[in-house]
Length: 89
Image (cartoon, rainbow, N blue to C red; front, side, top):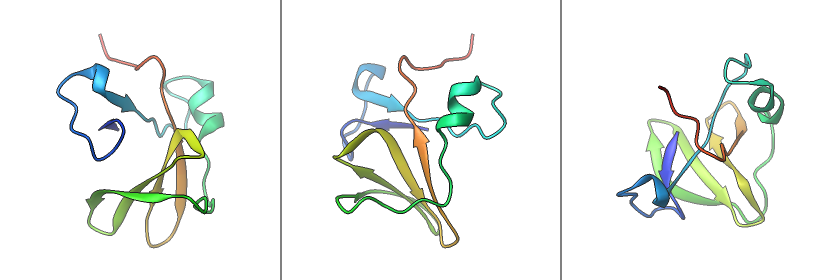
């Protein structure tokens, strides 16, 4: 997922955005599989970005700027940031 940083900023260029990766099978590398956290609690300072898709909402936490929190009615996941961005060739 690419989002403007800091949210809810729009990102006219990649320099204004961050990429977060959900890769439970490790297709993009072991790090993304290992850094994905499922069934976590939102940090106390988490705030909504305003980004939603149906019942799924994205949160950020000032105390954790290396991940985002994706909240659904069933679960909360922490997706790690990809620095540098991982792009397809």
